[in-house]
Length: 310
Image (cartoon, rainbow, N blue to C red; front, side, top):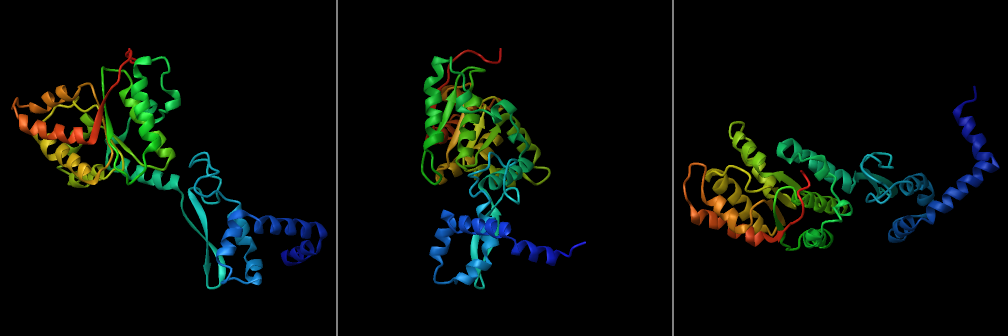
């Protein structure tokens, strides 16, 4: 059997290998990002250093950066799924380091939140909702669709922008709009969190016993984009209204974090719902305080159309 060193020497001496190597070399050095990197560091590099680093430079050119060539995280074309390369200089030589790509960052963040808050799980049709698949035969809902699409397309992290309070009858697609917004934001690498309010409040109440209540509330508070699905469907207690919902909304007001809601109630009806606790206590001022925060965070948009659940 031929030794590997002898094989390499034989290949290196062949005309075919030389041509392929030279073609790869030229292609690598003419790659726009490689040219830009070499130009930027021209004072630190010698031609000999560049030649010795060709394998690293070639490795860089063969991979996707910023998810530009990957259809999804599962379809990542890179050597390490979910990680993209970055060129840097170390001790006078060119090397590569790998960092999480935007999709991997979002995936890990979502997994972290899912482990912390089980109520994040929503029906699969909502998770896969897109503006392209919204019902096109519902003329009454065109306004709501446009409002939702406008936010998703124009929102930039760090800017102050109101969310939307979608209200209307059962089954008209309010939750579906949240899913479409969340998916469009995900395409822009903006993370969001959808929570089903009745289940959320039940879970937070149960979290008192295992000492995870505060960490869960902190996670919800700080979500880049937060979506409360079906607010008003829960059995309201003074505790959930004043100790859970109030502080979350107050924090998001102070930090100008986009917040969305869906409800079968309009503003006036929701205020009435918030006024009465499950004990039958009437607390108008506390309900009004919550509503002022909701009105500050989101503009009301009526969603109409036929009941799609029927």
